[in-house]
Image 1 (cartoon, rainbow, N blue to C red):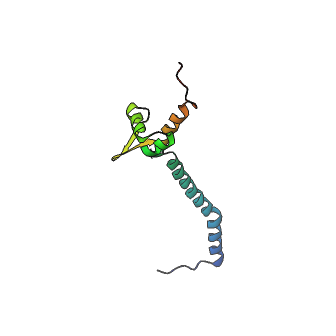
Image 2 (tube, one colour):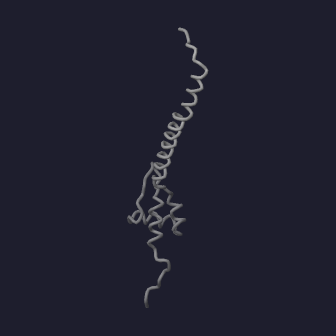
Image 3 (cartoon, rainbow, N blue to C red):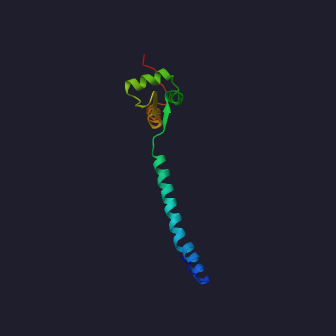
Length: 105
């Protein structure tokens, strides 16, 4: 099978067309796919350990376990690990009164 000789002008034109038309489309496609992957990764809820949740709340791990049992925090089980959503912990923090009030005498 013989290769056809391509005129020098034809090669330059093919390269010019590829650089001006096809390359920008390919780059846009890649950037769109990367953006979609990043969006899907950021939409996943961040799961934290009970120990980390306890640290955020200023409570003991046992108290966090009690909050899970009572339904204040929803557990997410991964194998033997029990995790909670960071957004749930932040909701508990936001719902707290900023100051503890004493019971009236």
